[in-house]
Amino acid sequence: MSGIQEVFGLDREHSPMRDSFMRWQCRVRQIAMREKQGRPDDGVIADVTPEGATEALGSIVTVLNKAPLFSKTPELKHMYLRTNDPAQRRDKALQLFSETYYQKHKEFSDVITATFLPNSQGAQTLLDAKRCMLAYEAYNQTFSLKCQVRELSKGEPIYQATYWHNLLFNPNLSPDTIILGFQPVWKESLADPPLAGGR
Image (cartoon, rainbow, N blue to C red):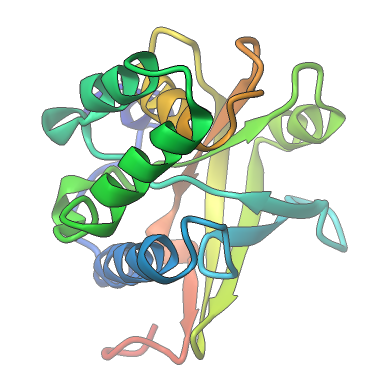
């Protein structure tokens, strides 16, 4: 275990729910990059409900990041810095993300991330709650993920991966952006239709 997983104290044993969600996420994100020019769709947007709340706080665009061993952050950073043209950055990013980037789901961390504006009240609400539900619904599949929430520091690899990923698509992203990590508790999460084996 390392990083956010150590902080949350979760074991990383194989989970059919995790495997199914990660496969699905890689598939829907590759579709978004290939067919929708990277525009977020329902496959990457989740309704987020803080623990104890009766309704969703809103919807967030989530990011799936490579695990540190398979990190592409140096490439993302280079892609951004090599030109000042936002259109060229976007084109290069779409080329990377639509080809091989999402082909191997086991190369990804299961810590889902999302960016928030500096001083975001929504981010603070989620941090205060410490846990939340992320609900995805797309392509005749839903996932309801019970998650633990933590603010990531700028020095953490997954913060850097999320920041440079989003900067390629949003040149106005604040350098003080807040990035939250959502660690699913797979045994408390659900899929519909259910996975083979009952959950």
